[in-house]
Image (cartoon, rainbow, N blue to C red; front, side):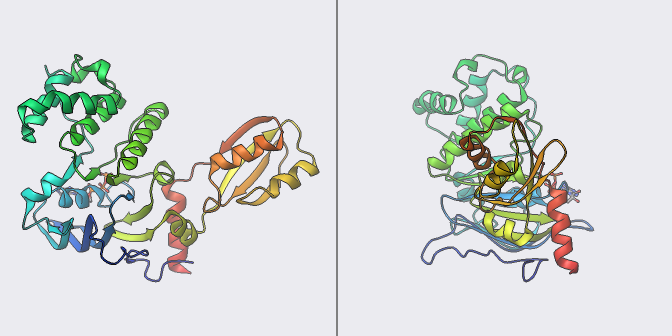
Length: 329
Ligand code: ATP
């Protein structure tokens, strides 16, 4: 089912009564001259949640994140962090957020230690505490062994982890992460994902943007999909998959795939259908019922030998085609 108002759906799961949302955006509009970059979006994020903000390039993700980070003053609507108005009390907001932009910057002649001391001073962390705080964030981001290395010599993945270490220095409750996994190789992406998982376990609230739906899907408790400045779908992962009726195709080659095995595969949780192709099975998986990893586990449990296991990428294009279908239906 398409959302009731696909051009600007309201959050589908209201924040529980009595809980102040960590992020509250209402009817936000941002213009850059003639460009209407953000067109009336509303978002609420309760404490401890991970909100995936997903949309293609130019959709308005960075602009929205910059409003929350107090870096853009020219907007209408309201934006609050823990009930504090971003436009009226930006200094107080800055103490509660850790903003990681989508670019790292150039830090010639600074090593990791100097870089973090510089930002610890900028965050006004008392001088006596700085070493301990820096040691802690380096350990958390698994960069302790890089403390003496030049920042510019680090790999992209390490730079991303260092950028995360930096935004953790003042122990903010809310992390605003603009495309932290973009441009990373699969291994570095997994490392960033693991790190984000650890941060959620520490109780941080996280808003994280990406242009790839499946990159964030299983990390997020809520998702908002934005296109040309408008929210096109918003809610829990299950809600989004239900709204989009997304089905993932997983191509599998098994050493044996007779009818008996195929019947067993059909019974696996989340499997909607199995098509027997010449050299493989094309399994339709409902990801709102089971994750791709669970399908893999279930196949292993069947005792069959897996030759190939290849989930088709679930990209924005598929999601948007679905949404467009919903709108025109
Ligand atoms: P990306 O993933 O490419 O960063 P995004 O979803 O973060 O995309 P924004 O960077 O917020 O999108 O851009 C939204 C729109 O606003 C785009 O049309 C962009 O060209 C425009 N825009 C962004 N920043 C500026 C600026 N400083 N001046 C003029 N136009 C801008």
